[in-house]
Length: 299
Image 1 (cartoon, rainbow, N blue to C red):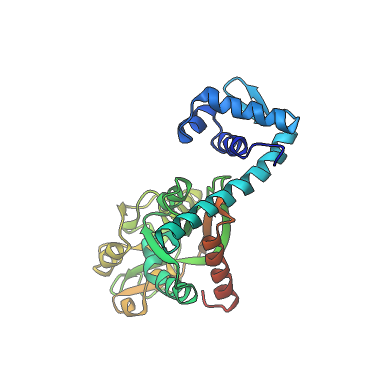
Image 2: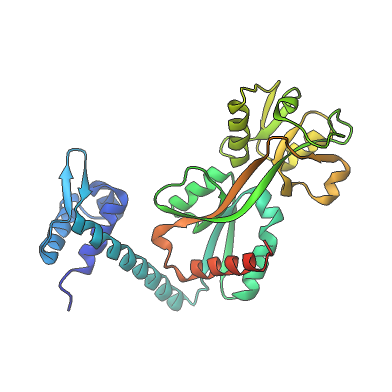
């Protein structure tokens, strides 16, 4: 039927994706010689050498790169077919696993997910929360399908599509000495106890980078996981913080003051997913829905 083996093509795809014959063997529940045999058979079938083995690894030949692009598409289609067959057998609804940060779960996801479910009621949604870094890792490990978060060090395995640009602002308590300022510098903020998000937070990364660039050392730096705790801490006059402007709701402005920074800081938030999943029909519907909302200026 074909001049090549589909099984060998899938094995080849796994070897290249994981960058290792042994890892591919483990993932596919095969022996390493079995994996090597599939690669050899595919090279014989295509009439070209596809992989150059080197000490400690391998590289793809020109022909290997061409075959891999097709292997990616075929593997993605095979996964989609497998998912469809499983859904038909079990009469399951399609599932989209979305990851995001705690702030976005409160200020953006309710509207986004409700409008998506209204447009595609047959699709079930599972929402996972955590720091930006942890949620991006969850997509790489395939625990989640897509993440909406800021991530400055995106893997080559991921697509990173712009979502929104978030302004960072200073927040103080309503009775804080800085509360009446129209704008404030980072050096002025650093004179007070500064409470920021924990390791892995994109906001933390941007703030610390800006402070380091200006050679500013905060008087006291406190790490906290919860944005809600940060706002309560600041409202009680125990310190100051820097958060995305969207994190402070209108009703909270009675106890908090939102002050623009003299040195503007921003978070570039993206929709991130595995390149190998770009042909997933459910994911494509989600991306199209986001594009429609952005075109209508609803995000």
